[in-house]
Image 1 (cartoon, one colour):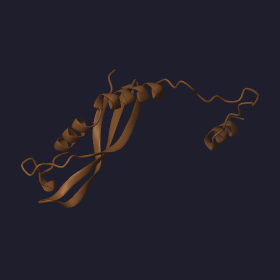
Image 2 (cartoon, helix red, strand yellow):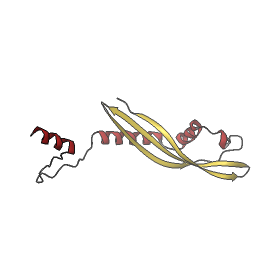
Image 3 (tube, helix red, strand yellow):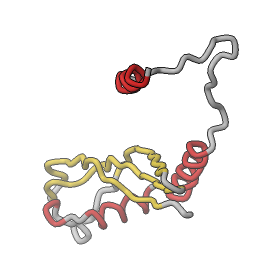
Image 4 (cartoon, rainbow, N blue to C red):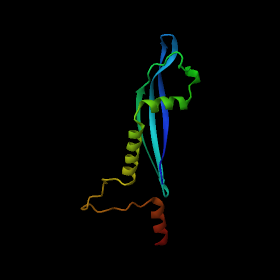
Length: 127
């Protein structure tokens, strides 16, 4: 099954004034998440970063109050290497589903089963 990816915009750094413009976005703090469900188990990984935004011309300026998430994501995707980020997420998911290294119990230490209080009570009743 294919995984699903989505952007999360965490914050925008804004200059209160820049020449004749006010509340100008200077950087975007972002995360990109990937989720995949295999059977009953769901795996989620993410990467995060920030990127600078080039100063807009007065003609292309969008008032801070009028910004949309889609517009900010478009700026982000025009600035960073989205394909590289997506490839990294895919590799993280694969490594999470099929870890290349796992921890195992030491072979010389006996495995001790934990008994919950309810199991202990049930054993005492049957004796």
